[in-house]
Length: 131
Image (cartoon, rainbow, N blue to C red; front, side):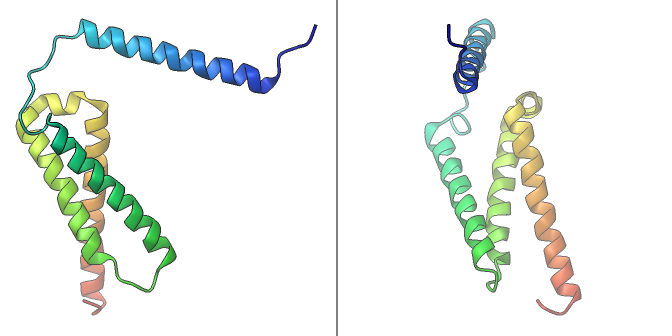
């Protein structure tokens, strides 16, 4: 009898893990009481807009790696502002519930990292006379 290949074992393990996570998520969502939906932060168009902004920022980061002779400071300021605004809106609407969602915690950290980066770049370019 043939032994299963490592690739087949990994594939079976991965698909089993995925199914376990999926069933756990479904059972969690059915057992938790539904939070009231907010007309803005839970709307499909708000989430679609944020997704488009994330994709645009990802493209900009990729281009910035290849084209280094261009100053991307103003573009970074726009993205940091948009992500900070999204975070502020969600914190205002959801209050303490905002911090109960792991994705929101990730967004919170990333938004603050972007804001801090923009501030540090502004301070360093101002101090070096490159403003």
